[in-house]
Length: 212
Image 1 (spheres, rainbow, N blue to C red):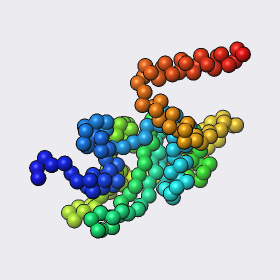
Image 2: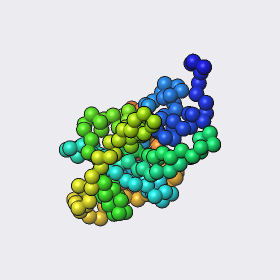
Image 3: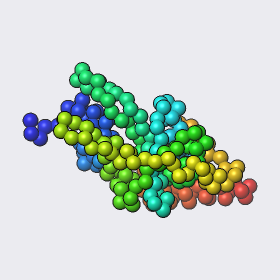
Image 4: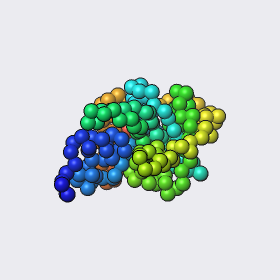
């Protein structure tokens, strides 16, 4: 029926296979495709580590020509049941914003992140802003045509031989526990003014501790 809301099975399929954000689809809020905007490397490493511990994902570093923007894509081929049929698809998690060479270094230490995808500035912005779905990243195939995705252009990572240049020796990045990660997610959703208030309070507390 024209104008009718899609069924839950179809909505779940869209969210699963193409990372469609259901808030955007149903409520016109947010962005079309889900991305994780990490507030910093600590946050990114914690979230990525949790996923890698659970499943065997492939890892690709997204970057621009001048390396001013970096991201991480975790991906794996899997399947799910849809109307009594098994559907193959690529599950993907995209991390952007707070990702820097420190995250790349950590991935190298884990023996991951050995592939990289060079994106134009425009495409990187689209990925970061939630305007690039799995079909564009990984391609699609149907009865009429087949189109390879951007991930078909991945190459060996240019960063894997320069890990010593990523951060100063002795710098450690710890994985956050669930409580700390929850607080980080709440902080990420604050307005800029409220973030500034939190920073001011934190700095004042730190100063007070030093003076004691």
